[in-house]
Figure 1 (cartoon, one colour):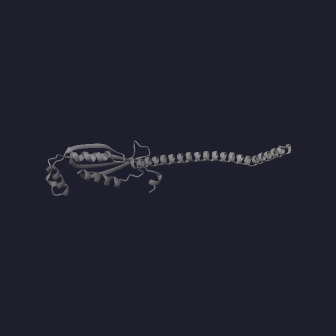
Figure 2: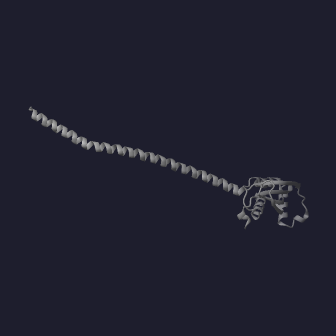
Figure 3: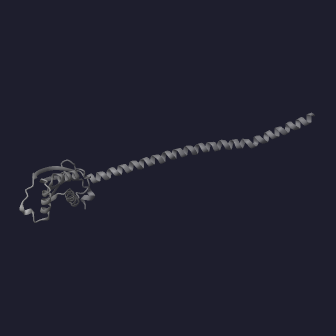
Length: 201
């Protein structure tokens, strides 16, 4: 092999190497750029996932607070709701098998809730011990805060004057089952916290 041919082969190899270098260098640079972009995108996606997770946690916390606020609004509303309270007490009495003989109310500024109001309900009911227990159990489990302030319990006297009324008939029916009848006079206190908006109505 002549020197001339060796030089030609070396020149061809050098040219091929230079050509390959020209092709591969941009590809290597592009690959590095792509990897950097992928790394940045992955970091962005992780940050985005963390933000979405945080938003979901905040939404859950907000829902819990809203639920607590609703419970508080039920426990201590902004209005007395007198008609609703009386209707509820009558339903409790009827569901428990009691007769509600009388009912009255009084409202005044609260001594225990600054800025709040007390709604006192006075009533007298007649029925068996089991019925009374059921009635006061319903009061105790009421969603609105209800404090029993006074409870006077006595035996009910079965007078002749009660027989002509439907209430008297119910009393006699209870007595006919051999149950002792009681009359219970009580006072319950409920609370409300009037806002300026509620006061303006």
